[in-house]
Image (cartoon, rainbow, N blue to C red):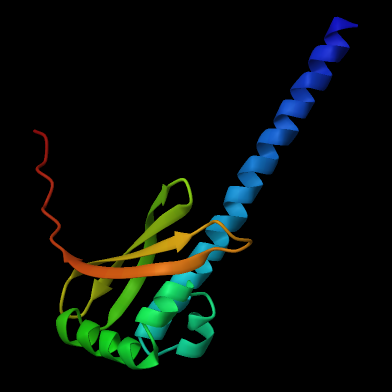
Length: 143
């Protein structure tokens, strides 16, 4: 009888844990989709109107289409065309996530593109976009 209770408890714990991981997995998938859409929009390969549907009200107010065009121009001038973007870091906070991509720029060799998402609603909403060139120092070989 005790073995049956332990087995049932184990199954319940595993089920609950898998539900928690599935929730984080679908959240990250949504955040990745929006992040990749934003990178494509900055590169001129996607539509701003579609991207803006995923903005928080604050970002929508601070980054209208005209400001987004200025952002694209600044990125092109300072960092160049972005390519080979890859998810590098996910930071989880209480009511937000920060997703960081590393990309190659035609003017800046390595570029960090960071997105902050509000995670309080049913779907994540983009609240902040930041970009900066990164200097990658070569790693010394151990001899």
